[in-house]
Length: 455
Image 1 (tube, rainbow, N blue to C red):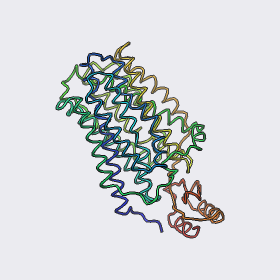
Image 2 (cartoon, one colour):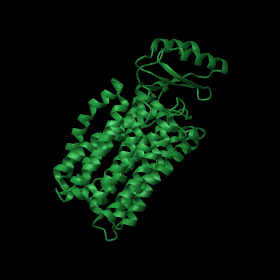
Image 3 (cartoon, rainbow, N blue to C red):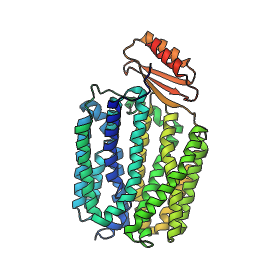
Image 4 (tube, rainbow, N blue to C red):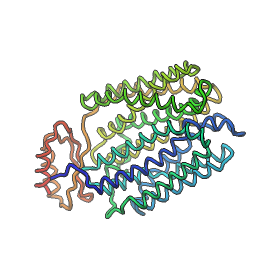
């Protein structure tokens, strides 16, 4: 019988690891709403360098995150996570001590080199049973989203109190808090193994990269983070002309709360009533309109607030929808590889958004940044319109223990006959059966019976 509840140990480990992810991402995100303002005071600052400073972490993060995850398979999860957190802290200190854009850019690049996300997810998988992996990963995802929302609110407040160098020092301290949480609260896994639902498998990259439906989602998350990062290259400057910096947080908190409230019914509509594609495409359309609106209304405080509301409503919907779509579309045993490519695309998007936003701002002004974003998101809108209607399937894992080929074949046949099961991949060496299921149709009793008989 499959347990429906996490054990206290699983809950404890998941919350601790989500906290590490949260404090690290909070440190990264806090500078977004204030970096462009501080950079104006530096003697060697240009808008292009401001964009590079904001986005450079995305380049190094994208380059190192998959290798860090693979290294954790070889050298252990915790040593790699410790290393990543220390690298992140060193980058933060370099940025805090720097009095030039060049020094801050180097510090930000080093921050991104501490790319521990893949290793954290792998350790989460080591410390949770297969049937509860989806819950654990959902908690990790929520910790990142919450960090982003909190960072936009507290970033301007801390900037008013301690300026940007103080935020970088705070970021270094948060990384050390992550080290303490890992040491004191996260147990050493008894066994570390490859988890195809959370980790990339090198032999599957070709398969994932040739899937045009997954590529549309990879392009989508790249463009989403491109426009998100480019927004913060110029938005703080536009806001500063309308309202004092110490009040920026009031704009962000009101807009973010309103956008989250509005988002919830659409998430329910998408999942409960199976309108995923309609909500997804609609959110991209709203994103296009908000970028167009910014290009014309960034001189007006009311205009900025209205467009920010539309922008973050769309962003929140898309950030919730995109990982779900990857999970629905990716083959049962390739979800980790698909998510690895997806995450790398996200960070490359942040880098391109920072650099392009800064360059456009320097040469053509603020309106050009938003017009460029509107053009790219319109292309994404067309790509999304032509995507296949996604299936309403979810990943489901079963720990099958040690079985032979004959037992695996028998289990595969049995599972495929269970109502609601659409795909089964039994990997003997992983001791896991990877399933894609329709949870509305899934017969849990039949699954339990099959699982017991098959193993």
